[in-house]
Amino acid sequence: MLKRNEKYINPFTDYGFKRLFGEEPSKDLLLDFLNEILGDKEGKIIELSYQPNDSLPTTVGNRKAIFDIYCINEKGEHFIVEMQKVEQQYFKDRMLFYSTFPIQSQAKDKGKDWNFNLKHVYAIGILDFSFKEDQPDPDKYRYDAKITEIETGKIFYEKLTFTYLSMEKFNKKLDELETKFEKWLFVIKNLNKLDRIPENLKEEIFIKFFQIAEIAKLGESEYREYEASLNAYRDIKNSVDWAEEKGKLKEREKIALEMINNNEPIEKIMQYTGLTKKEIAELKGNNN
Image (tube, rainbow, N blue to C red):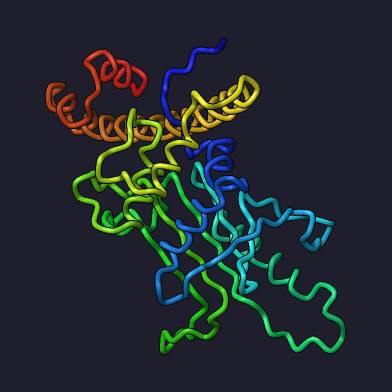
């Protein structure tokens, strides 16, 4: 029997996200979460049906979109939900590209008399990072975008909405949660760090969420699949963290070299850069 250390699965793993939001037994969790994202202004979703990727049309080169979750509600509106673990250079391009698939699918089998009346498409990204251009605003973690007219800022096209949630910037504690939407973000971000259901989250929908997330309830093969997904997630995060650390080290070394060239005392260089006396000496030797 494999040792299971944490009590709840990590939602940022492929397996964890699909188990919590992408399977029929957990469909009401996704429905509730989407309703909290959309709010009253978009109208409440009553029912969802998961859609297979092979139901979508192909594009140039028979390229298909592979979504984490793709579903349609009772009004025929389409929802793409993506969990993105690390920053990708063209993430926004990819989400725009993905949105074209459910748009194209609406023309399928319509015939020549179809009048191009499209249903709303929502592309939702749950991000385990924040875009560099968003980092100067540390308190803003939700972004909603539509096609707008540039000069007036008025919405030009209503039926295509992009929403992304920067989970890295959501830092509210349990006693600071004010809305159900904030509770959802909290449990998604912190689930695998918890060992019990917090008192202020003991609502029916969250109780079910925690029950489905229990690692102890996974069968042996399910746990092996989760473990492989968790290891892949950790490998990705470790690679990103190492790359960031190398970048920070290069920046510190650059500052140290400038201070060395300005004949600053070694104690001051250590204070400003965090480098050790040995590291500074090596930099100085390599610079001669």
